[in-house]
Image (cartoon, rainbow, N blue to C red; front, side, top):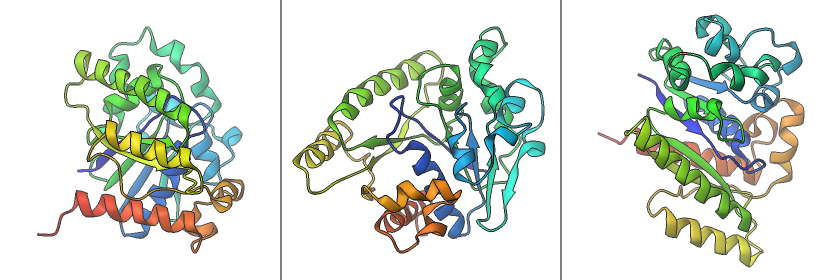
Length: 258
């Protein structure tokens, strides 16, 4: 059975897609069968893996609303040993189309059920909003939600809103929904603010903040323009080492010795 984690934050620019791509790449390097599912109409995860999002004819939209089996839509990057269910421009209208659909909140979970035996990890990259696509992502998060949080003040306000949304989904639709962990991103140790945010997030989420902290990194910012995760673009950079540490931390917790 695959472990399914949903990466979510309704605030944009916090490193959500960067975390999905780079965590997935390092999990794959450690021998895991990894699928990244892009359900963001902006298709950033698709682009970050070197796929022209304008050339994607079928992807997550067809899995959600087109009745197409996900297996037929998955692209495999042999170099990275990483699989992708891409996004496409068609997904932009899906929020409206989903409104009148039966079981509209669980369309993605139903689609991914068919892939359980094919992967060890499925990582879902959601849009920076709290619409039906993100709700589908939350409902599919059978092993929990991973929340990337930028180490800046406004990120704390967004984190509070997201926490409320998770609580509402848990109360109304999915009582088993849980937070798997919080990833601190874009950390600049030179600023007092960044250190204050780290302390505040740890106070709000005791024992749920990953030890691996992702620093601000030029290399991390450059990698997507080359269609590569940091593991392939700059494996010796500080950003690469941080994401490798995050993958190792998750693997150690998910697969305890003995």
